[in-house]
Amino acid sequence: MVCLALKQNSQRVDRKNNVPDQIHRWITEEGTIRILSALTTDSAKEAASSIGTNPEASRALANMITGASLSQLSLAPADRMQFHLDHRGSIGEIIADVRPGVFVRASVQEPIPDVEPYLGGMMSMSVSRHRMAGGELFESMVEVPDADISSGFQLYSLQSEQVLSFVAMECLMSGWDVDIAGGFLVQALPGWKHEE
Image 1: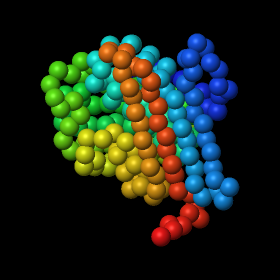
Image 2: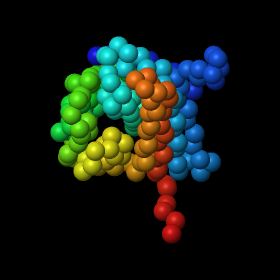
Image 3: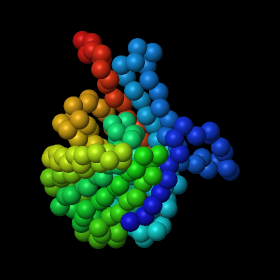
Image 4: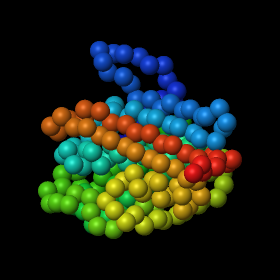
């Protein structure tokens, strides 16, 4: 498993067009919608390089790192959360373990899958949440009807945490190298009302 660290609300530093990993948070004036955005390029590059993944596995690993970081920070920032994505594709199980302060470890079962589909069939996301201050372990599992990692995070948030969220992640590759990775999460907070 590769260990990575993301900075929360860091100052934007331009190092020859290389912006370090960061997560930003916003909330609407009414306090009913929260938005988080994450740039996870450095973490995705480090994970892909350390594990030795091909482009397909790198993309899936980057999306798992991004989604897990956003979800942990929005749902349980003081807790350790582990996300296990299981499916029938050739990449195999993908794991992301996030600790408070957005310290991320990640792994992929098959770093160089050679058979399509890479992510496939019915997927399931198992999540365990452990209170770092010494508390209970909560475990949950959701079925994901399509081969989309972001759907796993959205369904977990809705079904297990009863929080309406929209999650999107993207990882763009240049050959075998991660070019850019990141995503965002939009979450309805108490008091939010659907306007027709």
